[in-house]
Image 1 (cartoon, rainbow over the protein chains, first blue to last red):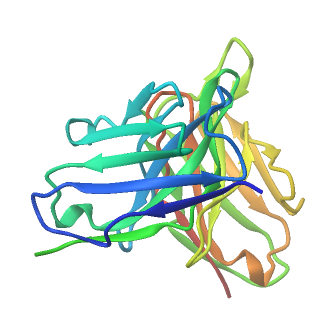
Image 2 (image 1 turned 90 degrees about the horizontal axis):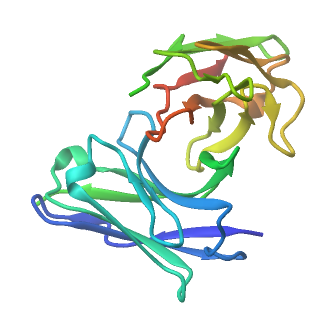
Image 3 (image 1 turned 180 degrees about the vertical axis):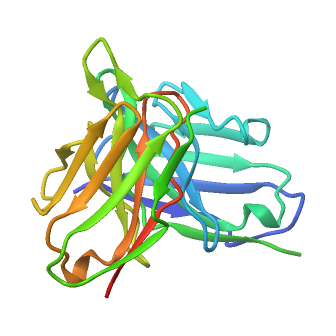
Length: 123
Length: 113
């Protein structure tokens, strides 16, 4: 069974960079059938897509976060990563990684999710 | 970008009764070349990750009970729970995948009356 697990610091200081890694087990990240995505949920709010990346490195980013987001993939370790720079309290959220399945040749639905990790931005 | 708007924000339904959630996109998510609506629904329970319920607006994901159904086309969509069960208490989200900026609705909270 496919499993995704987020890892990274639970507390980040304002203006610093939030860094998370998602490790995939039970399946290979190196498939053209999928992208691998990041979604977050601020406390009391809804879901917001952040970015996704394919194993060859092709990536999409949310335009509202694009200037602060970088993503990477390491196929040898079967994991992918997110960096969000210059964080503020507004970036406090549960961060999820998810498999982004292709339908009709394009990334479409998030069909497997990690459990999520709470990242708090505070000094 | 396409904006997804759900209604209502919350609803309370008696056990065994029907729950209906609406989702409206700011522009059509119907792709004319294949006549498919690029719209999905998710269920999100507290302390768990979201779960994909429906894609192509009306196709149930494997293992999803048939009391969940999706309908609609173009800009207006509906998720129906035909007979609400206690385990269906959750927040439900629609999501478009028509553009390369995958947007969710703001969520609809379903509770037991």
